[in-house]
Length: 401
Image 1: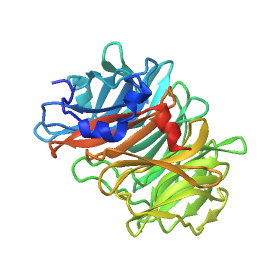
Image 2 (image 1 turned 180 degrees about the vertical axis):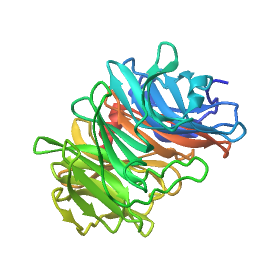
Image 3 (image 1 turned 90 degrees about the horizontal axis):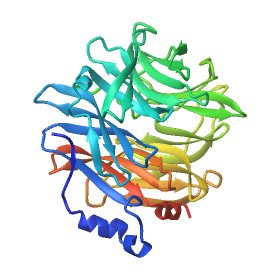
Image 4 (image 1 turned 120 degrees about the vertical axis):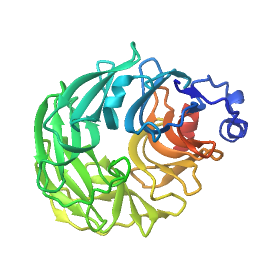
């Protein structure tokens, strides 16, 4: 059965989060809180969300069903601008041929693309979302890319940067960066001879991506890339490359780095785990052309669940450039922390989901100046389901005052 929105009455949640809605005369799309439920025994786990040109949203997720033996199958859910369910891919037979989709969506000419694996031969597959037919289309298969695809980032030239734990770089899996051009053609690929600890889920065989991710940053006007690795001794390394994937430098840490984003030039914001505590570093300077092991100190946030995903992103809210950290608390709500990237001062926090057991999946700014947050939750304390939270522009601006 296609995914439907639950009929639960979240009266208490509405009182807590959106009590000002009536007085502010907010339109329905400015604030909403949706959980998408259905009658099957399948579990759903959100990975990514994007806002489409019509104001609606598309959510990328995986679905599992132990009864049918379906594991880590890609799943798409489409909503209107108010978060109301429009269609999903539950009945799309083609999806059963794939597994382990990865964020992020790639937008090209108003259409959205994502990567996953072919279930039969484990090759990487690029898939396009066909909104008109409520289906998907295979765009390209990459037969020569073998291993675990971890992350996909868009590059300034409208290309893509793929991070793999490659099976072709050596006898053991090693990190590899793959650059695709704007037409998804292979430009270059680079292997890095670094030992890694590729922790995998026993059932799904998915790599724990909390400690493996990549990204793009700009240093003095030049494009650079980074990738973070989980070392065999459960510490982290950060590798920096030039625009052609040539290694520039390495930051070795004695910590578990689980999010990283550029502030400006060689200054970064990050989070790390030390003795199970989550620490936030609003700004630190790394020497990206050297091999160094700097001392890293952060502000400890005991309330954050360090085993869950945390996101560090630089964005503009309320006309102000900020670094936000989106996290899941120990007592389950989602909390957003906003820091001034210059002064490193905590500007404000926003807590969502005091009633429901939410876990952060992704957060994006919306066209109206608000925020959209895709979360994972439980229905009836048992079934894994997807939620979408919309924060109004005013509430987003209040976060950074």
